[in-house]
Amino acid sequence: MTIDLAAFAKENGVKYFMISYTDLFGGQRAKLVPAQAIADMQVEGAGFAGFATWLDLTPAHPDMLAVPDPNSVIQLPWKPEVAWVAANCMMDDAPVMQAPRNVLNKLISDAAAEGMHVKTGVEAEFFLLTPDGSQISDEYDKAAKPCYDQQAVMRRYDVIAEICDYMLELGWGPYQNDHEDANGQFEMNWEFDDVLNTADKHSFFKFMTKSVAEKHGFRATFMPKPVEGLTGNGCHAHISVWDKAGKTNVFADDSMELGLSAKGRHFLGGIMKHASALAAITNPTVNSYKRINAPRTLSGATWAPNTVTWTGNNRTHMVRVPGPGRFELRLADGATNPYLLQAVIIAAGLDGVRNAADPGRRYDIDMYAEGHKVRGAPKLPLNLLDALRTFDKDRSLKSMLGDEFSAAYLKLKMQEWDSFMGHFSSWEKENTLDI
Image 1 (cartoon, helix red, strand yellow):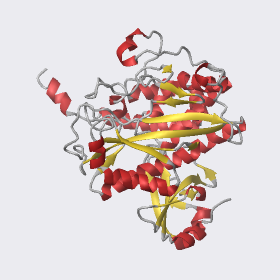
Image 2 (cartoon, one colour):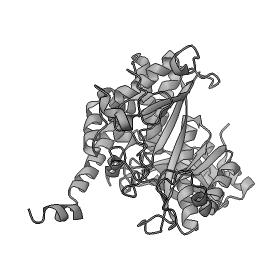
Image 3 (cartoon, helix red, strand yellow):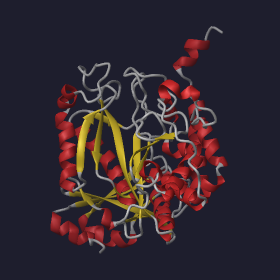
Image 4 (cartoon, helix red, strand yellow):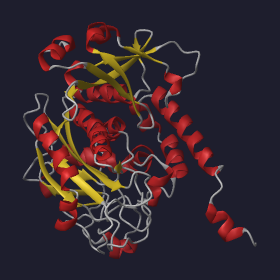
């Protein structure tokens, strides 16, 4: 049943709604709408100039209307008079097919047409920095192996507990929080869900984490590699597919290797087939490639892949199968767009199922110590340009995601790369001034 937002406001004391959408670069955009105006907005949407955000639109385009999905509404636990609601972008009574949430909705429909109900969970890692972003916020967090450091996590108890309390209040089922492998880094986990719900929660989690951190005088960042020499921010995704009713896990088959069914293997095969092109979506920034192609970090391991391989319960590969009926994609980083991450997982996996893709050989070696022994497995892109070029060549993946989206994404991301290449760095002067 569709929620009536005006009634929701009256029942819950909401004064304002944040009608929010996410652009191609993962930027969260919103208008603050008084509750008295939400009834019309729920039908007609809030008007935006799409060109003013990271979408491939011009100033001449008509208004883009962000039509709220009332079933996504979340009352801000830290400011209950405001409610956040995810929106679908429309223009001239048609969906804007480059808008990330619309891309995901299309792929959900494509999968549903083939009786596939995708469920996912994400592990969103972040750093707590000083307000200017120049250093980690905890001056005592200096251990060489800081992962799970109980003193360090308790020094940031007020931030972590507040966020976790809010997730409990929202019914997300958070189940663990920890200090991660880098100094100043944390991870918080909540239960997996239907893929659209996971994307909305992931989007809201980033907003909530940044907001709570600011409230406590810190700056939260999901940047892939914010501190040189330390482990970067990953965003591992746990993936399973269920039947049309969402009751039976069709990836689970105890008679098969690692408990992964034939359909699960084919879905995994699609991920492996498209992995190097996936990186343009899962690792979408220049900085992303400082994480997946990083030298050994202070803790001793990057915990990030650089080769397209899969395994059982082994964290040194791009994909691991930690238990029956699901697998973990370890490629994505903190900069990934919450909606595009889920969309590209479905696109690659669905293509794999349709074409009975073989995931290839399973490796159980320590890739960090013995990766040089692997022959024939593709390497992940070395930089954003390589990733974009690989994505551009992957016609089937681009078609699955939609031609309008793919063209817009490539155009704007190539402009971003060109901007980066036009930037003069201190490294250039330090290394070539006297050549």
